[in-house]
Image 1: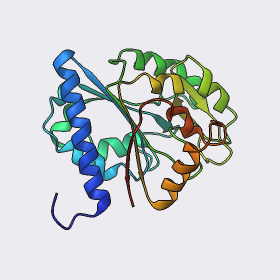
Image 2: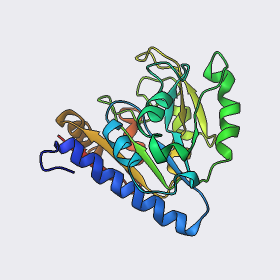
Image 3: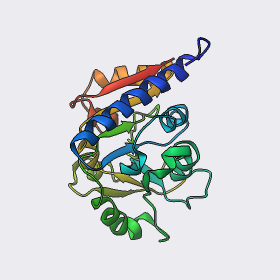
Image 4: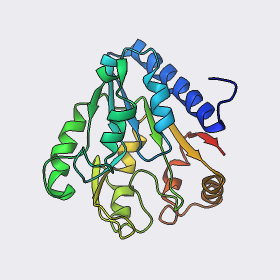
Length: 224
């Protein structure tokens, strides 16, 4: 990292280093390792830094914490984001498992995606969470009618309809997201630090769903 790197670029490199170290550590003990990542604009510098890491990528599975129910070529697709910024160069050898199907709705596709996920190396080595200004993480939104289900079910996935979001979504359930050896939260900006502060001061998961992950060890990666 150059001397004139921004705080967010520095943070992305630090996060990539921690993730790469954890994957290497787990691959000493097992044949494959699973990395669960989130979408949005925040992780793009992290994806690029991780893609440059020297890892046995062909032994690494990558999937998403959640996804909009759109075609993979859609600009809003998290899978497209991962393919364009993470699965580049040597990292293209990783096994990426997306969360969508050709079905018109996530309710119709959820069983097929769940079957796809069961073939991965659970528990995940790491889950990298993001957080919105409303306290959502993955697609666990405060205004989602499926939030209670997503917080309580033992199923791996939940189809989500959220009034504040234009597209239907599919998300890993809180239970499945908890099935990881390490949980990391990657956020930037003073507004999100303030939301995290509010979350730490209470326990109502419906108000701020990120609270579902504050009772387990959670490494927070934040930059202004």
